[in-house]
Image (cartoon, rainbow, N blue to C red; front, side):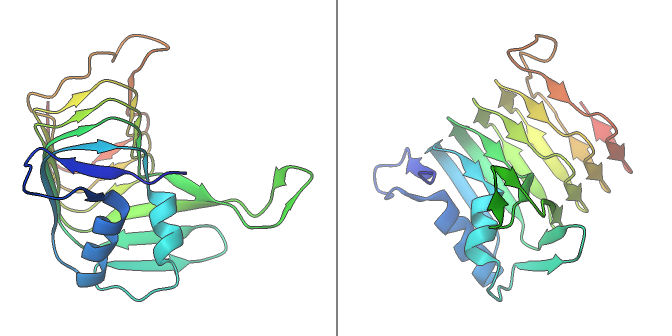
Length: 193
């Protein structure tokens, strides 16, 4: 799968790979920031996991047990004035390489835990957004953000404040074009819509 490219609106900034930039910030343990750009291509945490699973990085810890893989992200994420043209997937499964008769064995969920603030300001998601089963231990903000496809926060757990101020989910009630799913989601602090 072709990796996502960040195309900056500022002509003085060079385009760069989203996955590579995110991994560099996980290596350094420093805040991940992107401003005023268009992201072309799918963003999939599975691909990032595959690239870092055997590495020691300051901004992430990875644990695996018999039931699941837990990826804990320990950097702040700030995204402002971005347009995501494709899918943004932060929930996935890892399959072993033992594939026999087209059946995937040893399927394990990849659980994502965010231990720092996650902020999307003035951004647009044109594809699917998927944060299923993610755990957010700090503040989460979707301020002035538009979701044009399906936004799935099912079974997510928000342990601090979450804000969807001035955000727009145009397809929230339209099926099958898109919807917002928050089934069995836990909010342990304030929620602002």
